[in-house]
Length: 359
Ligand code: SF4
Ligand code: SF4
Image: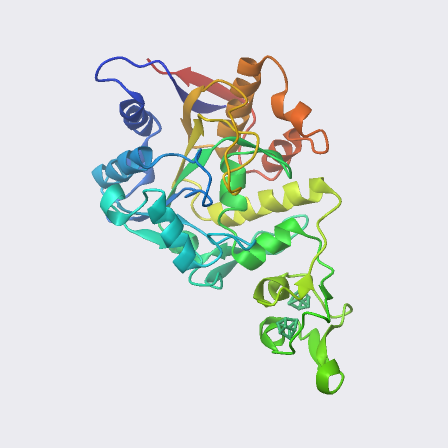
């Protein structure tokens, strides 16, 4: 059974939430996770432009200090988004992060976009999952020696809730990886938008795209017999001429996210710590350009070394505080428990935990 440490919201002089976070870092054994001179990725979510509920910079700064105290060299990171927004390339992502207060000066550590300028900086990691053999993980996360994951619990239309598993699996997938999780790809070319630039052909790993037709009618065409559904073309067409359908079975997306989480954590099983922030719990995630009113009172911060246990404990506390299955009622189209059950089945951790409350 895994231990999950829990700091509630009650504070007193000299014992505020940032001080409690430092205690959590100590209780969770950050000094065992981080070795001397380890390059430590602190994975967070900088918030889409317009959102306001993401984990604030002062908490990240304290974790940066904790990693340094343990002898590590931290950097704060996230990977680019699939959708066109304020974080779909590294330049915009860094500008958005800075606008939200996340800079080297404020954090005491560099900010690095984990999958590079346009989301092509990833490593393929073998996971041998039930759905995916390999996953595309942002390279800075793969090459980091240790991983500290800072997650904000919110509701989510795809997974019911999003916290550590979603933050790692979806959040550290490269842009093509995110497409792979979001869609069972059957890409289609919208000929009216296609300029025959050939960009998609360059990036298609299966040689499934060619230009067909003559003159003005010359457009990209996809051979669905060859297509392996990787999603790269949907990302790389800057004309928005290739669209992919969303999955109809949300359980598939949940399981893919879990398999991406396996890839991101592979080889770091003893080099990870998870901090879940149950504050400003909004119905939608921080990828939206707004943050709605919280749906439940602030609960506190949880920390642990078992990603499944920390997420399960987080949801149990949310439901206890709400007095009902809050996100289950809000998102009846998806069973949020499936994510945790599949993660446990795949050996990522245990849904059984011991909650260790702190003073
Ligand atoms: S990248 Fe887009 S615009 Fe260019 S050829 Fe492919 S589908 Fe057409
Ligand atoms: S989804 Fe991947 S394999 Fe299929 S056409 Fe697009 S780039 Fe090629």
